[in-house]
Image (cartoon, rainbow, N blue to C red):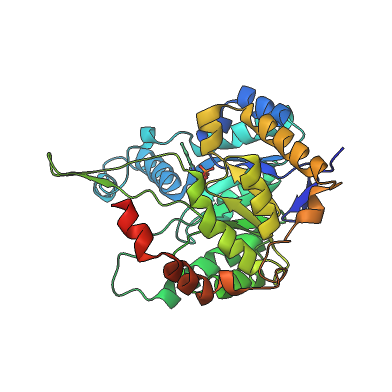
Length: 338
Ligand SMILES: Cc1cc2nc3c(=O)[nH]c(=O)nc-3n(C[C@H](O)[C@H](O)[C@H](O)COP(=O)(O)O)c2cc1C
């Protein structure tokens, strides 16, 4: 029997598949089914900074009727009813999820500024969250803001949260930072215990008939895994914090690749939406078959075996790969394709 146990953010986990933040876990029945299918932890759907801001402004408005600034200040935010859960409902759901299962439940806070995060972080800690995932989705659209300022803002946010709570905190990171290894090392310095590679950006699509810009959400494909494997393999072995891969994990092969790159866990959302909750059990069974056939006794033995520090030839991770890949594509292939 293969031992699947692993570790993430210092939490001992029974296996490598964590359910990433998605509405699937908004039902307690699903939370139970996810545990039964073999998920080793669940990251709840996010509480959004903007939603909390709206709730507190709505409360202020109730307390002092007649203030006009409230309605004006809301122009850029969705309606409160667009959000899936209010703060109180979220805390209640977290408590019920904790009661329903034995696996760790991670709360997800989604924001970009230090704002009121500390209060919400301590609230989810008190409600029983085993850890907090901070999703810092922010787009640099202001030309006066430098990369260094953006990184500093992120580090301040993480430092504020990690010093306010005792439970481990991870950061779901955007892929578009210039020096990922430097930033991740600094996140570790300010107390992060895990990093999730990477946040998935949802770019709007353009409708050329109606001349509208529309939000889109497509589920991922396994091709999105490659940049995550690449960075996990580069980061592995240089840090004390644990790595998680989120994005493009669909099959047993994807999970194995993630662990071999050096991740402690891999996270799944799209694959569960597409194939159903039982998909987790099928992936674990496929992994077991693959590992047993090759006479491994534990998943841990494979961890990091394809990381940059483990392979004899590191050129595939560096500029050498870029040159080799481009040079290997011959004119003959190009002509044949046309
Ligand atoms: C329907 C849906 C809702 C999501 N909601 C959240 C969310 O509230 N917070 C968050 O951090 N990520 C959210 N995500 C992103 C996922 O957690 C995950 O990082 C992303 O989908 C990439 O993983 P995948 O390839 O397994 O789908 C959502 C994804 C989907 C498909």
